Amino acid sequence: MVTNRTFTMIKPDATAKNHIGGILKMINDANFRIIAMKYTRLSKEQAGAFYAVHKERPFYGELVEYMSSGPIIAAILEKNNAVADFRTLIGATDPSKAAEGTIRKIYAESISANAVHGSDSDENAQIEGDFFFSLLERP
Ligand code: CMP
Image (cartoon, rainbow, N blue to C red; front, top):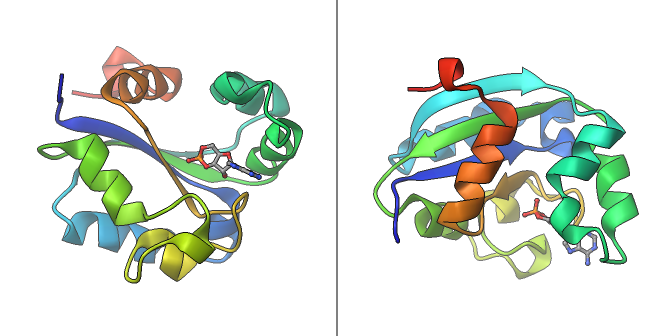
């Protein structure tokens, strides 16, 4: 099933370095429409719940600490083939392996402070959007 929505976060490294505007411009220029967006900060408990799928991974503790270390932007994006096209736009998880011109190549610091999150499937896009936005907060 291919849907036309994905979910993203602009992570604490990128908000701290004033990259919000640059990243949103790249998202708009790639023809994604922002249909819901909020600026917020995750507690450790919330970050742990959001990334619960990675609970057994060695980097989970570091990921939770990092994602609760500062403000983030959460957003639902719309475009045909949104999940796959957004993952192309952001580039590889590890910025040293990200293609030229991708958001992570331009803005990310490291595999953990990697500037943005993008859903890896339509199912997770729905789950992750629901984590941040009520039905009243999105079309
Ligand atoms: P994201 O796309 O938000 O999904 C899971 C996150 O875990 C990923 O981006 C990285 O920031 C982080 N991550 C994945 N692999 C590693 C790793 N080997 N070391 C540290 N963090 C990682």
